[in-house]
Image (cartoon, rainbow, N blue to C red):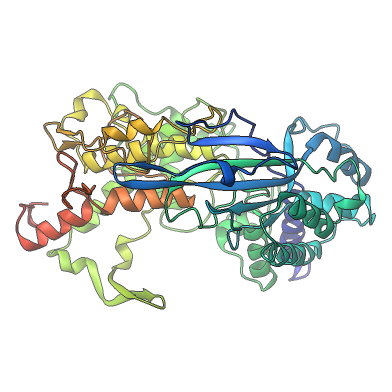
Length: 531
């Protein structure tokens, strides 16, 4: 092996992965009934000669707040099944593959239109999959790594030309067909147009928030490949891209071990000397299984202080989330142990501050000592539902045993409001969520004995209520712009009554208000030694 062999191997894997993602289209939403006077969501098929949704749907007003419609146009909607024949011509069939082909409909391109019928800048997206299929069907090109830069150029060209056009669906569809090259493939050059309309707060209809037509990973993989090409490959990534054989000379962590077969290794890994200091507050009789405990110990004691990658595999319902809870508990207790060793709260920070800014403002916050960092956890997946389930299960009151529910309370009022506001939207019922009259619940809250039972609904108009209380502010949905916005609003800012300009009666004070009250002395708080 030459010194460059590990890098060349990694680049080949990343090129192959990128090409797979290039051919991974996302499905368009299903059609619904028209929204009607009480609706807030619809997906309709538009045909030439019909009025456009932004010419028909009227804005709404509730509790002094204005809501308008934001529209997503799916241009050139085609049947995914029609594209597969071209993939079969270019690639041999894998008889060992067990994944079924994805059915449904996708689109050649997508754009977003605001409530006044203007194209939202930066929202135009070209389908990477259909662009690549055109290369196979028309130009008979074999997939090569240079397709990355070629597709980026096509995407920029479509976006620039689209922004020079009016929001005319037929014209934009023809433009998408031309730029993608699919206009030469009659059965894929569909002129069908679907338009999804969603009710949003006034002021946000002009923000680019196009649904994904392409794989989530295309840009990330391109960035990773650029770094690997320069020789930069972190330990975890090197482990992930290592050869899959039983002996891995290029792997930074040595040979891979199947713990389902090596009982001696597992028994040694769950010894009394490796018991974590923290445990999730579940029922004492519901302990982790042997290999669950091994995974927790391995993550906290061996992987935690270093860098690398650990794989835990199991089908749904086998306890992966349960294992994650104990890792969370172990991280919390270890960080608390380090904080408890400090004499003063100020000792948690170093002299150097973190600074950032933009054209209007500059910000700075104290920087934590390095030994107090590294306990953060990010749950990421191509499956949004799986991530959201974990993000809502961990802070939910049902995640801890009954004996702890009256005692474990870490900003439970804010956490409960956040769970309510960030509940997933339903997109297939023709309404997006409950009708606008659900917003009338705003402000109806009451103390719950430990804090506040916040029923402000969060989010936006008619925000769906999960109805599930939380015990602690320990996890949150992030990822999408909507989720990040909901988290920011629910965590930091009080719910203000527009009639009085004050916090809505009965709603929980959010974190910004609490910090201000603690700083001014208007609200009691424990001193450092008590904490």
